[in-house]
Image (cartoon, rainbow, N blue to C red; front, side, top):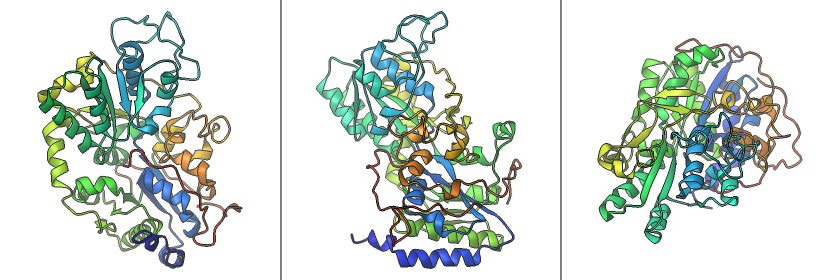
Length: 447
């Protein structure tokens, strides 16, 4: 396919891989975080790690919008459908994320998923393994998968007698469509439409990873040498927001597209910056990303949405100024205000390592549940649900080389500065990039 195949050329990939191996200095380790789940998916699918030197490690970041969604927010959405009789609309990947392990019937210490006064609220059909939106739908909740925010607005028009809630998640890429439907609902005077806004922001998460008190409490923050910046997000916000990380934290950022040659070229550019002692924002994805970004998209978001003071991310905890909510002018369409929702945090499954994987301090196979109890058919954590999740990507393509124990993983300082073994044989290996030729399911919510 024109304009795609050119970025999947096996011979060029081998040449870039050879260049990376030649320029990566043997006496030092390189640790680059690909923030976006789309890059994690590309690295696993196309076998990019197999072309990198053993002392260069790609660390999976918290750039999967489903993976970073905390359980408490899913509880709220499920509660709206089960208890308030609302039609809840959301993107496909969100449907399968496990929520709280509630039991049916009243419990002495039962939580109210809506945060209301009735702590003895009965939730029908909830099981010990945890309810997901898909399971709740099977038990009678009116939860609908939509492809876009406009689909949710269409459902609200079709059912004026029902409350319709759009469970809005995702990074800056999916935020403008949410803002547009809220604005349109206001213009049309729709009284039955609202948004449970859980949109999160990339810059806040990167800053939190680099310099957060919470990271020091964990004591397991990995030192990073640079970032592969997200593609779709950067089309909206531009490359300018990353300049603070290069300037203040001395961390190079290279924005890259999602094709294998994009990712490999970005890695080569990062290696060169580290070798030369530079910390700059470079744009490999020049065919789509500009410094200023999409002004029209930014304008509609600024009109409808505003920053939250704090928002919980799975794996990162509370992150200041890292998420959005509806402005007071559009409060009539804010599901949290309309239904009186109060957020209550919920702990992850005790054996699930999604939090540590999202922080980049553990790999999927470090989790005892990976590939055994936790599979795409029976996900225990969010990283196995989404096609962009690190666990799902590694499970789908069998890429376990970069998950071998590294030679060393130093703990990062507050403004952190700045290996793996041989590849396992893959019977599905193709001659082009040393990768499996299988395709992933279509991505519902690109970052």
